[in-house]
Length: 285
Image (cartoon, rainbow, N blue to C red; front, side):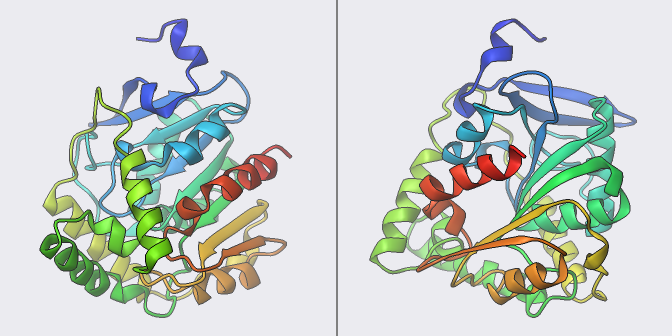
């Protein structure tokens, strides 16, 4: 239930978890920031739930804008079964957005979330005002279908070193990258109450299957995207090759591109102090 205090929450660690039901699916989501205006809806990455968003990205945006994060169908605390295609995931995201009564949104997406966002904006351009795509590539992009192989390898390395897999998947394994990885993982633990349900192994495997299909599918015509788009990545992304961010930039008319040095898939988290203000400025127009 909404309270007066909910309306002024600008800390993601304190954002209440809510649910909305559409058809036979109940979606878990969190909302923070000022009420009113066009909300920024966040689309999360592979094997991630509500607790996987970096508060150093969310909080600066929530000071200015209404922010909504959500678990798509079958992920975390949301009910139902994860679909095995990106397009179906996009359809579910639209169902969630419409269940909240939203007519126009801005999208902030990362990794798998970007693929869903691309499918959504191509199918429903009227819904999206501005688009932020980070750590991603287009359908049919080079080596996207190899994400599963990289993920399994880094999960094994993380297990052997008793580390969080994201430390390997998102960051370079040099001194700078290791320091940034440790800080990032620590930030994800700042929320201590009302944590989300873990993502099931079955859901994770189905997401990987969808990513592989996306990577092997025919390229989409991204020149039809009219929403102003900001694209960002690190210069050494092992999960979704950085060259694909440059490919997106070439194919989406008028898009802006930021590539951070000496960083990987999680470059936006490593450089959150620079990236968050850039996003706030981009979304303010």
